[in-house]
Length: 407
Image (spheres, one colour):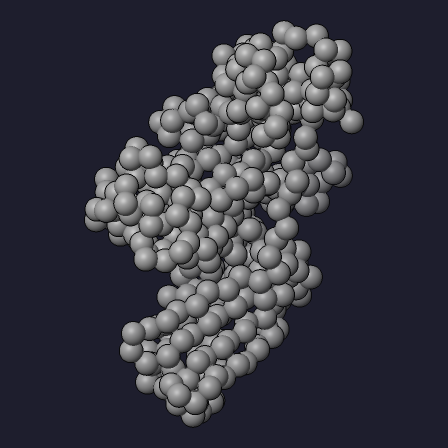
């Protein structure tokens, strides 16, 4: 089904080049400007997962055997594959995008689409929106995204590919066909066989396909021919498929030295919460249950679940709850690994029932937090408060006024 007449669909594509390599360089700055190959070590029978631009310039490609990559570039830095680390880092980026739109579709590691329709009222023109998204991602992650904005996924994604971190690419409605025309056919999401046949026929640019009669493409290529014609003319009706939110947020800490004291354990838990709480708040959620798992030095493991009386996103409240619980227990051994999980996640509404049943101080704290979330998401605080002016007036409009709520 197409978009309603007069409604402009706006898709934003956020792409971080060579995401896994970028994460490794972020953790190990000494790797900057070096050829980095991710996937394992040269003696392993494994493929290259990803590589830095320096390695790519030496003709290293994903899927290539590590041994071959080592033969081409023996001086490269080889790094084992850590998909959990890269996925967790990408989830942090997706959580940041949640601040701008509730509809986020991960496309590949380091690349996502979001629905930008209607955001001009909050962030201004499209270029300003792109700059705001890029700035937020860089500020929180130190990663530099390329951003493209257009009326559909194909054009937005291609725009991001042609953009640079400093200069986002915005393709206006109606300019899609012209933008795509000089680009190679390989940008179209078609089968390898169809691309090969296009190449044999000398059809190597998107513009060449766009100018062919639809009937001719349909008779020669069937449904893919029809799809190719539609895409080449800048029409892509694929909807965004929102990501499924994980039911829990979790992190693990593996220390070099076992933890012997409560204070050491609390420091480790605080470090884990430093990563979990921002992700929780970015999703505008609260936690209803804490799950702990400790691996003990040579004696197995210990697990515990703590259900909170009131869901919260307060790091201090969660840490205080953990302290109280840990002070009452005795572990049979030293702790080698700490796994912390925030579960029973819900939205702000999960705790609104108590907003007016608690003491005034808690009400104010909740309102302040809600105002902060609204300001972060929309760039302004829409909350108002009623201020009595002349309660005894016979004219209702004179009894009170609405003013901005500024906590």
